[in-house]
Length: 217
Image (tube, rainbow, N blue to C red):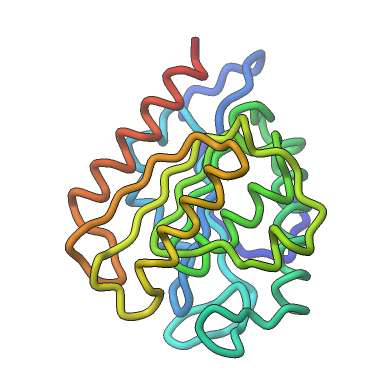
């Protein structure tokens, strides 16, 4: 793939050339990289394409997908540009690899979760499911974007009760936003800060396993 993004791609070891497979796209948080999130979905590496992207902006000690003016306010021009680039990347990946366009999932943490939720609204039925960890839905996405229906969407939203980076209430508001637009929301809170607890990880795996099993039928 000719892409502006650096990424890691793994695929099932015994690909059937006559079959298309689900895909999980991974978007890391600010200051991290593409090696951060694959551990969360390692249980699915033999049934899915797993594509973990690196943000294009250097943000020590790693990278970022966009910059911010302050918490809750992405730099809009950069955010819009990277969102379009991500949509293009995902569409090209679906075409390039043996990906079933009806079985596309996006998992993001922090600013990756912000992008995952925004992609759900901007790509509509091209995304089957979302896992949004410790993020929020920017108001300008639902108020100013040409959004697409999400009433087909399965979304898992989680947040730490003691998140010191993104307020837990913003996770609740994201839940309410997606419910208002008709998505099927699973919402969890954990006694944690800005991170992923073992219980959170187990719930993520259960959510994805259920969705992927339904899609395999």
